[in-house]
Image (cartoon, rainbow, N blue to C red; front, side):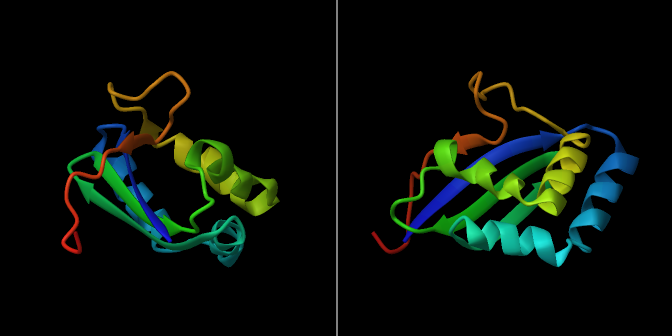
Length: 111
């Protein structure tokens, strides 16, 4: 099992941030199923101000750049992805191909 951290910003609009939080309290089961279907076993998203940090775990063969967007093969998950992108914006450190920018692991309590 591997763990991943990624960062993304929300548009800095209090109403949009509130709506983003509201939407995540009502995620459709099809979206959760789609994420599990691509191999993600655990996912958490944290928010401070308009900055998001996403932590997730997936199998050892999971490669985010290759595998993550495969969850959008499910129509409801694709709708979700497109809707969430209306609230989001890339962080300045994101590469040209990144939406959620990868964060480097610098400490693990189990090391």
